[in-house]
Image (cartoon, rainbow, N blue to C red; front, side, top):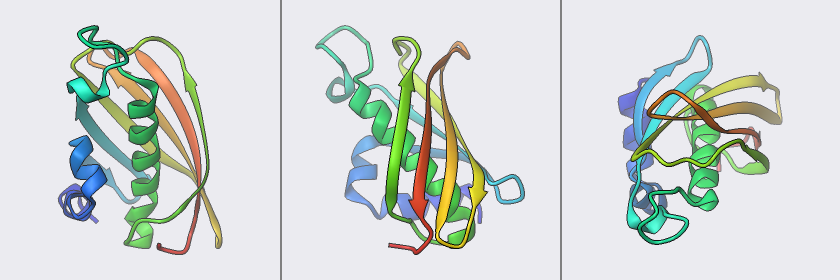
Length: 135
């Protein structure tokens, strides 16, 4: 599956379209996808601060984790559990994320997700567990 196909699937979701998430790359062999998102006023922690709200980062992390598994399942899968560690304030106008499948079993997939700012600093890490039945 290509990142263009992933983008096509994401564009079918009103919420993901609202986020403005863009697929940058996909590597089926490595179980890895890369995304980018741009800051908008709706994503700011406080108006005019340029600091990302944790909820926007959580949505980015969850969606990226899900789509790492889309590479092999072919369709979005339901989230079972999501853990996020916020490591530093995110303040750049765009963020990039990489999601890597850690383990894909028959019923559950586990994905690790890194979020970096434009200076390459790690701002958050996440781990998502997803049901392997496309939902």
